[in-house]
Picture 1 (cartoon, one colour):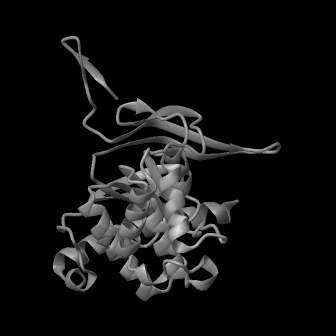
Picture 2 (cartoon, one colour):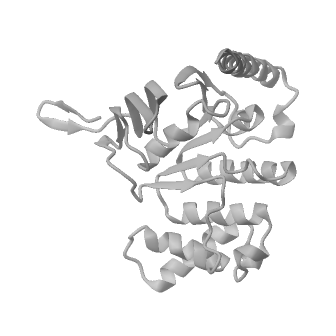
Length: 275
């Protein structure tokens, strides 16, 4: 939020502020409390991974940050301004590739640039599109359609389109969950490098502990509806998994996250069995 001191406006130290947020899913027969008293402050340029089991509220929280749903109570601020809905200041990448099948690789990325609302000429749009397509290693597939691309290539296009928006904030909902392990690692390292180089503020949803360690500055571990713990990752960027895994520091952090993650998975299973 913004504070006032001596009559002047002082910008918040945080890029994103989540204050006492609650959210329910309601239908005609029942109400499900998906998020309960969520509080989280995220600094500019910080890479946050939200780690948790299916159904714990990770994607619900991301949908609130994207402005696709509205909080039941509490507030979310971006750059000190109350979030009221979707905006071009936040780019979103989902697990499903969400590409337009009738547009080429270049056409899909150009669409993202046009949606940003920036008043730039055609040549500049073309340059920006090609820059991001090259960044994700698809310069040889510019004129292909999504049906002609592998799953990994389609997700690269989705990442290029999100980066082409040039939004300060990137929201990613398990974007690599349906990709084979080798390509997944390539995309993880690609996103880590590009977001670090471009000083993006990232909120990345995952249930993969190794992915969280590779990417995050802080890992937010969720249990159903709540934040259980927040763990700082002290490895410098850029990170290469082969260089990290096996070190004492990595194994210690991995064990800490396994304990936090699987404790809440067991609690969730016990709760479901009791029902």
